[in-house]
Length: 151
Image (cartoon, rainbow, N blue to C red; front, side, top):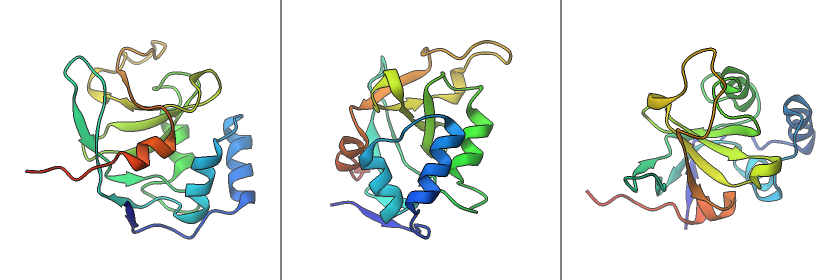
């Protein structure tokens, strides 16, 4: 069972519609429900695996939120990263190392991916999938598969 701490005031349908207009996309129902219940925050447990050549893992530092939050604002992250991540994706969370958890919209079927900022394309180049790794097939799968890292 996942617990979300430090979540923000729940997003409204109007907040979500405004965001969808800004990004010119439609969020999946499970993610909308998350925003209307938690609207960001830190998950417990927080670790996940992603499918790179090394079968790596990371952890969610914070889910992004809609509203006036300065540090983890969904629209602010979208605007800051839309030219750095592949087209058709939005950031939904970040890890402690500056990497993003991104969601594919439209042709990417709402799948959840890890975006590695250490190997992103050079400034001025079109972002591609070379530093993007599949985590889960949906937001619900992502949330439900978070686990506590055993140290």
